Image (cartoon, rainbow, N blue to C red; front, top):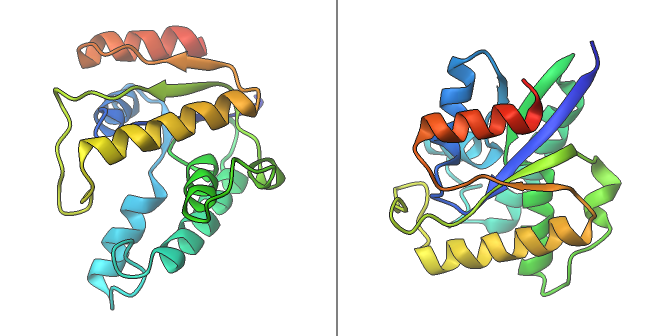
Length: 175
């Protein structure tokens, strides 16, 4: 059995985690979001690499975690909840650079990339997601432009009830 690495990315608060949890419940392999894992670990520790304390340290850890996860998945299809592209796009944006070839130097996800659009009706800030909807939409726009620039086939995950989104993703991936 070959290995497929599928990226699910898009707008913060767009319902990615809910959709991924439903897919995991159906037996799909999921790689959890690096950012959320780092925040949980930092809040249990000294908190120095939290994105609102030291964004550079947070980004470095997120990139290392995303690359490690990419390299260590086994056979079959794994869907990544955010990943290397997200971190590289955030780093380029923070530095005021256009999307860079650095994204491709690490690892390339298999097509299609699953892109979750903004869901203003479901967006909620939480203790780990402190930015507002406008910032989330701007992040989504940067990701969409970068994925297009990188030549990825993009499947837009339609705003719909979770069961319909699971069926759409399953059909798009043939699983």
